[in-house]
Amino acid sequence: MSVSASGPVTSFIKHHYRHFNSAVLVDAAEAYNRHLDAGGKMFITLAGAMSTAELGLSLAEMIRRDKVHGICCTRANLEEDLYNLVAHDHYERVPHYRQLTPRQEVDLLDRHLNRVTDTCIPEEEAMRRIERIVMEDWRAADRSGQRFFPHEFLYKILQEHKLKQFYQIDPKDSWMVAAAEKQLPLFVPGWEDSTLGNMFAAQVISGAVKNATTIRGGVEYMMELARWYTELTAKSSLGFFQVGGGIAGDFPICVVPMLHQDLKRQNVPLWGYFCQISDSTTSYGSYSGAVPNEKITWGKLSVDTPRYIVESDATIVAPLIFAYVLGW
Image (tube, rainbow, N blue to C red; front, side):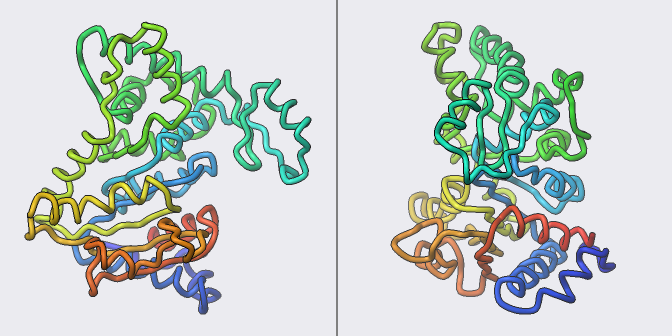
């Protein structure tokens, strides 16, 4: 059940957020709670660099409190939560990033600092530290002929406490730690488009890993999503909360028309709630910026599906909605 009492953040939102995008934020958050109170489940998608934005500060608690029941994210969000977990003290913030010259960007490169907007991720302490640990499991799985999804390798190293000695933040603020503890269903389409994906490809090219299919891919993720969606929605309505656009949102929402149109399973329910936080322009053929009504024509949402779009910065809006749902 949702929390009836309102903490200071929720009380502030209720009092001040009355119109325009702020009012939609409240509407979406209240509908999120109603969906859960009615016995529904919620699926969240993460695009962009939400993990580097430290969304785990609120998302981890959402997972622990059973406000999230499945996640689709980019591999970047998967790995960058762990980078922050083990290398937070070595990150550098560049608040004047808009004024950086190309020469200053080269200086960051020379220092092995990879910039994400105003935040620089340190290569050695973050990326290479995770690579060295997960690479052992890639090679072991390859030798034994086993195959796992990308998130399963990372769940494994968290469950075996292989990173614990390197923690530089409280693990309660890591959404991946919370997800691994819950064994939360994760789906990571296009996982190759990531730092660890590049590192795995290098392992295959060099011959250190013999079989490129040691890490299971997108078609298998869609098959697993179809199985999970079908089983879950036979008992509960599943909502769709989309943070940003891109493949993280586009990939999973298509499971419903695939089940209906390609597998002819007409008894599978549509998504029971939809909210997208987006700063994409809702025109010019922008799929990530398409208004929710457009999804009705694709067989993803119904006329009766509660639909919301908050046109704003996800790093601002998502923590506020999560705080509202949590009653903070």
